[in-house]
Image (tube, rainbow, N blue to C red; front, side, top):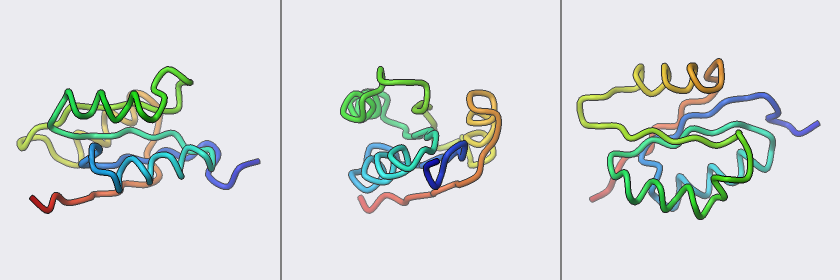
Length: 93
């Protein structure tokens, strides 16, 4: 059994390299991951790099400046049934 099997993580600013690296590590340890970002095209590209078609352990959500952590958590709950980790990465731009 993997260390994070059946755990669910939400990662904001999901197009950043730190976010995709974290998503890959978490998935390799058995977690399900929901990436969130405002840039839909960049988010879809990040999902493609991570192998979006490779299983049901990866999802994404296009957020907005009006959306907040509770909205992202609710989306993860709707998709995966719960949230165990919430990783809020900030943008440095």
